[in-house]
Image (cartoon, rainbow, N blue to C red; front, side, top):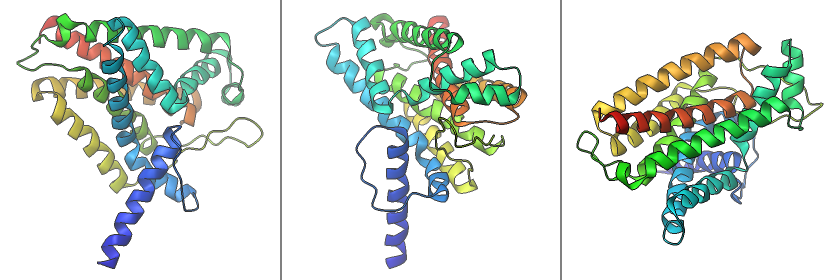
Length: 274
C-alpha cells in the first residue's frame, strides 16, 4: 500500500513538473528538480497539450458569445500563447534565425541562443501564425464544424485537443531518435528533457492515441497519423542535416509545425469529404 502511494506521489510530481516546465501556471514544486526528473516528466508533455487545447477551446466558446468567430479564434490563440509564454513560438523563430543565418553548426547554435529576433525568425513567426489562424478560421467556420465528415462532427474542442496534444507527442518523440546538441552556458539556454525512457514513450503515445480515439473515427485517425509520421521523418532529417541532432528550440519548432500540419490535415479531410 505504501509502495503504491509512493509511486502515485512520484507520478503526480512528474505531472506537476511537466506543467511547470511547459506552462506559465504557478505550480508549486516541493522537491528538487533534477535532469532525471525532467527526463521522466516528458511522459506527460502530451497531457499538458490536452490541458492547453481544452483551455483554448473554452476561451473560444466564451469569446464567440460576444465577438465574431474570427476574433474568438484570435482569443483562443492568445490564450495558448499566454499559457505557454510563447515557449514554442520562440523556438520556431530561433530555429529559422539559426538555420537561415548560420553557415556552420557553431554559428547556427550561437544565433539560436541569441535572445534577439532576426529577419528569418520574424518572417517565419509571422507566416506560421497566419497559416495557423487561417486554417482555424476555415476549420471552425460553422459550415465545416457542423458538417459530417465520415459520419462524425468535428468539434471545436476536438480541433484544439488534436492540435495541441498530438503536436507535443511528435515533438517530444524526437528526443528518442536524435542526439542532443549540447549548448554552453554563456548565453540563452533553455532547460529540456534529453532522454525518453521506454515507459515515458509508451505513456506519451498512449495519451495521443487516447485523444485520437475520442475525437476521430479510425478512417480519419490513421490518415492523420500517417501525415504526422511523414512530418516527423522530414523534421528529423532536417534537424540532423542542420545540427547533427536537436536542441530545445528544435523541439519547439517541431511542435509549431506539427500543430499547423494537423489543422491543415483536418481541413483537407473536411474539404474533400474523405
